[in-house]
Image 1 (cartoon, rainbow, N blue to C red):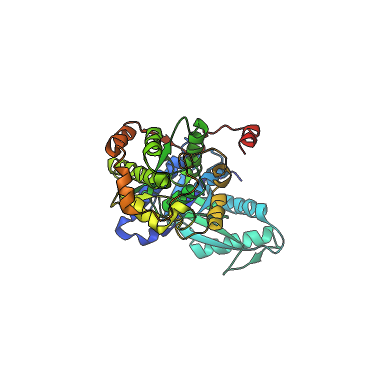
Image 2: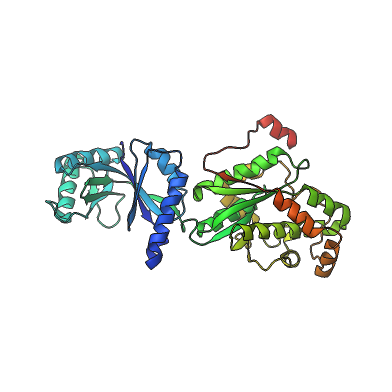
Length: 405
């Protein structure tokens, strides 16, 4: 069928009381950003629904993108008809025929915003039910749990029909829970952490450290591509590149091997916290999972977190690797994450890390480097870009991938 609009139902927004309008406006804005490459669409946010008028756009392509926007409970492709019951009956039969099989259960559910229409809801339900059973006698009426519900909405501007309800991404509209910075590596965990944070309404900005020439342009492109993978959940994402080469070289030259990773991560956290303050963020997010690697013990976290009082939130903290991998596959970041490009977290990594770094020693070793000067230089070199759904940054052929494996 050639649908004319998508009717979007809100999720947890029903519990937001006086803040409901703010949440609806944010959801509408996120949907517009996620569908930025469909300029023909018109958006009409209402108290109980968001109506997206297609104006000839491909409904399937729009729904594929819309299904990733947090804050949507479900949505239905709809057809707008003139307020002519003969036309409504004919279209209802066509719509049900496309889904028909013998024994299919159905019901008709009518809502009227125009209470002056010539028929009330019960009359419309009975009329269309009889019409469908006459045209398709092997249909079965099931009021309580039908396989297909033909939804009819009588409005002032027409009558809208839909027969399919598609589950949305759920959660809260991104941006309704405040802003945070995600420390994004090129690995499996941090994109999953970002996805989970955005699902609870966090407006995330990606902070990625890169160290040329030790890390390649492909590694940077991979991080941007990972950002593009999760951008549809927010509409678009800010990507912040932080040059980290000089800091890593300085740490490598002056800090004992066992403390390289601890001091390096403290510097990353300091810089991320500076960026957070500059960009009005409330918290820092990362992909740490407790005990997964040597640098993610509680002792290491204490030593690293020592440099800030800003909340450090870890959405995947209690998940094991298989659980994280499952989510990564569900959101289509896993295959990209395992591509063999080194990021700055893996270069200069010593063979044996301190799993229980001593805080006093960590602080002492940092006195061997120019902490403030190195941070200022890194902040001065950051670059910020906006990454939108559907954009691509990593062009890679299989032969090159195989050569790196």
